[in-house]
Each structure stands twice: as C-alpha cells, then as structure tokens.
Length: 184
Image (cartoon, rainbow, N blue to C red; front, side):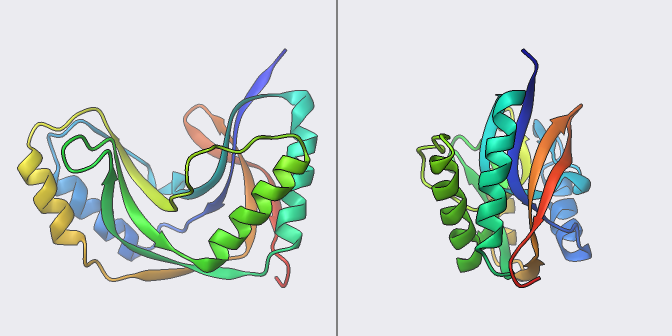
C-alpha cells in the first residue's frame, strides 16, 4: 500500500532578519558538515507522522481541522540559536520559539489526534525552527562561539493564522491541506 511522509506544522516566513541570522551562521560555520534548511522549507513542526498509509490520512485531517477550529490566531516569538544534542554532540541547529498560542494549538492537536487513534510522539514538545542538520562537528570551539555570539539575536514575532498538513515530496515540504485558525 502506498504511503506518504507527513507532518503537521506552521509555515514560517523567511523574513530578512531570519535570513540574516541564518546567513551569518552559515558563514561562521563554513566547513562544518551541516545540511542547511532552504528558506522556503522553514516551519515549526507540531506533530511528525512519518510514513502514513493513505487510508489513515482522512482521520488525521479531521483531527487537525478540529484542533485548528478550536484555536485562535496567535504569534510566535523567534529567538536566538541553540542545538539539540548539547554543546558536545550537536545534531540540529535551531532558533528558539516562545508562544503560549503554539502550546495551546499543540495540546488541542494532540487531544484530537488521540481521539482519532493516533499516538503522538512521547517526547516533550520543544518548539524550535530548524536551520540545519549536522553530520558532525570539526571545530567544536568555533561552533560554540558562533552559537553564543547569536544567542542574543533580536527576537522576531510572526503571526500564525493557519495549521498546515505537510507532505515531504522530493525534499520539499508541500502543503497537503490547510485550516484557518478560529478568529482569522
């Protein structure tokens, strides 16, 4: 049976300020083995589904529509960089996200998905904007210094007006369905 690689998330606009931070990190970390996320693929993941059989998709879509209908429009604050895996073994370079609205939407999505028979990821939700995935660090000191230099990057806010069901197609994240948040 055919499957699709899917996730639920929020699109993030590649603003000039975001592009500048990403470009500075790319310059400073040149030579490191990092696969940088193209600006058109910037997003916040609410729930990763992985490979899903076509027959399960309508139930997931109904659950996500329910979550969106119960959530008001909100903003996310995008802050400075960090890395999953810690300072010694970084695997993912990200920008931090702060948003009560995002946590509320995630909670509604998880509840609706459980009702639809989906068991969400067990790990704690850590809102972030992935900038790159690392295959290893050659110069750990330079990496740490770069992260620290940009930690105080000016926070940016972006409005969130919709929840998107994305499909990964040839390395691109293509919206499969969209739901306006209540109040938009």
